[in-house]
Structure formats: structure tokens, C-alpha cells
Image (cartoon, rainbow over all chains, first blue to last red; front, side, top):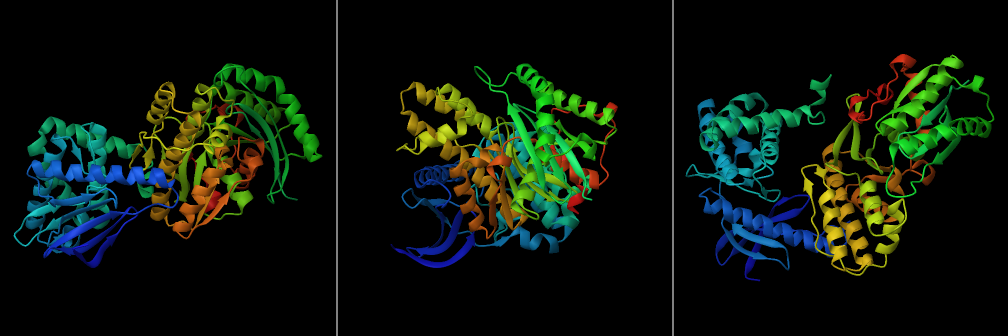
Length: 219
Length: 329
């Protein structure tokens, strides 16, 4: 191996993320780990499928001009993806201490990016502010397409935004409304009024199904 | 004296009567099941079966418990979810008993009953439940006054998936044990659709794909092995996430499909990975039974939950998260 393993960046239910130096360049290696509860053969099929799926989504998003990490290599034997290391801060960690004007402008840009994905049939699958990185040059990167898929079904797009809104509600409680409104203004600009309102209506429909409604609201 | 409740279950193929006492003792658990001559359950035929056996099963249950109807403090009945014609038999019998012998009538949700009998018989306090049967596939946990759903099937339930598959492959019913038996002889896992959307899983696409492979001549053992591994892996993934999210320290497997040894092993591994204790409902209380309705009736009656016979309509789609469970507080 030519890579020098530096540190573990994150450890999720599905994968472990390493930061490494690869021919002098800092990279991220995302390795999908085996699950003991799955038949080993099926486990392998699933990990390979998901590795390919994520790489394809990253590639397609990048082709659209959306800032996502560039893929350096994928290895199906180890079910890992090597990609560009994005230097910056997670929006999750800075949004709450930002001026409202700044929050609005950032969220609008996030809305534009997600709108671009959605009109092109890409669902991110885990839109949280932990998966958005602000670089020093002011660029916003979307990361972790591990739960994403190709779809233009309004239901899937609605779930994508529902997950994002829920993330805002839990981590940016004080500024949820500002964030989501600005997000939607950017989103709407890309997908158009008609599609935007269909997707937003879907969010409320998904929430009204009951189990997504918070216990407090149901009383 | 601890209260005694007689419970009636008739939501699908089983007409069951159980008798439970306030201290958690099950005094009787008697049932008779309708077996379709061909294909799946025909609700009206099942209902006719239930009408024909109802009085015998009630008398048998009382005899097993060594009680007279006068000794009973309340009549509990599953009013849903389930098949309308079947549910109406249980409701009808329960109303007659309640009115004739002046007993309180207790409305019980079938899903709550599966969860409560599992909690009673495994001695679990506040677990994450995996409720898998012919009619339901849900991941359930208690939160804020009700049992909440943390994942479920978007189309057919797991037990129904196995039953339909078994029927199409020419195997007997119920399908799960036969599929599991053949799966143990399988050698290869084939490529099939794996559908998990958020916290929900979908089995209908998997079923269609397997039947197509069957026509292509793939060995039945490999089909059964693949069907079982894909279906259980989808469930396990969602259960794992729900366990991480709810932070529950116990995992309890309930419902008819809980009898599957392979599923038990898988859920045990999922639980261990999250430092949770794994428990499974005993076989006799896994499938639909009257005892679970009687025991939940005890819990309801202690919390003052009763219903007047004229209001006791059946609800085919009565969701578990619509039911208040004050005894969990």
C-alpha cells in the first residue's frame, strides 16, 4: 500500500472513514465493513453494490457541476472508495453562531445544489448539515451519498427534504425557519414553482402519516 | 383477588380464546385454525370456520382454566387490525358474552396484544420489538404514551411473503418453516433486489424477482436460501438503525415468524452488536392466540379501558400507534 493511514475521521453503522496520504495528497478512504448478521455472500454483494452506487452518484453529481469530492479510485475487493479530502468546516458546527444574513445566503446556495440534484434525478438520502462542508474559499461541498439513489419519484424527493428539515429541527432549533425558507428559495429557483410545491406538499403528507410526527405534536 | 379476563382473537385464520389473571398467569389458551383448501385465506370462509367453532372454543377455554363464566371479570376482544369478516365473529361473540353475563367489554388492538404477551413472557421491561407475522411487519418501541412504529413494510408483510413464495414453489402452508428447511440445503446466494427506503422495507419486488428466477430453473434450495437471507437482512438493517436511534437495551422478537431459528440468530447478532439483550416470545404465544388478547385485556381493565357493545365496531386498519397504553408510564 502506498497510502499512509493518518486517522479515523468517522465511524458509522455501515462504513469507517479514514484520512490518508496517498502519493503526497490527503485523501479520504471510505471502507464498508462486513456485518456479522448477514450471510457473508450476501454481505459481499450488498457492500459491492453500495460502493458502486455511491461512486456513481458522486460521479454524476460532479458532472452536473455540483461540489462533491472527486473520486480517485474504487476497490471492490475491499469495498472502499478513495476520494478527495475536503478541507473545511461542517455547516453543523458553525451555522448556529453565524449572522442571519450569512445563514440565509449559505442555505440558499445549499437549496440550489439540492435542486440541481433533484431535477437531475439524484436523491442524496442523508441531507444533514454534518454532510455539508464550507471551505476556506467559501465553496460548499456535499458529502456522503451512501444512502442516495437515482430517482425522480416525488415521494423520494419529498423524503429527502423531510430528512433535511428534521435535521434542521434537531440541530438548528433556533434558526430552523430561516434556514428552511432560504433553502427553499434556492431550491425553487432551480426546480421551478410547480415541482417545488409538489415536493414540499409531500413533506407534510409524509409527516402526517403519523409515525414521523413528533410525540409532542400528537398529544 | 386478582382480576380474570377472557380474551377472544379472530383477526385472521385463528379463532382463539385465552384466559389471563391479573398477576400475569395464563390460565387457558385454546384455539382452532382455519386451513384454506387452496391458496391464501378467504376471509368469508375463515369467518364461517370461526362461527362454527366459537362456542366450543369458549367452553374449552373455561374448562381448561377450571372456571365458570361467572368467575370472569371482563371480556376482551381484538377489534383490529385484521380481516373484517373474521374480526366481526370475535366481536359478535364478545358482545353476546358481555351483554348476557353483564361483564365489561374491553377493546384490544391485535398488534398491542402481540407486543404485550411478548413483554410478559420474556420479562422484558421497555424493549424494541420486532413484530413479524403473516399480516404485519413492524419495528415498534414505546415512547410518550404509545407504542410507536420505527420502521415497517411498505407492501406485503414478511410472513405473507414466505407464505406466497411457498405456495408458488409448491410447498405447504404456513410457508416459513418449509422455506427455512429448504434454505438450509441451499448452496448459492443469487442476485436479487434489496429494497430498504429510509426505515421501511419492501418485499413485493423481491417476491416477483424470485418467481422469475424459479421459472428460469434456478434450484429451489438456492431460491429459498436467497429469499430468506435477503428478506431477513433488510429487516435486520432497519432493526439495527432503530436500536441505535431508540437506545433501547432489550430486543424482543414477536409474532408468528418469530419461530424462525435463522431469524432468531440474526436478531441475536444485531442485539449483541448494540449491547442489547435479545429475547424471543415462546412458540405457543408467537402466532395469533387468545391468551395475548386476555392479558392485554387485563392491562386495559386495570387502566379503566372498556367499550360499550354498541360502540365496539371492528377496525381493519387500526394502527398500533393510535392506541394509548397508559400502563407503560
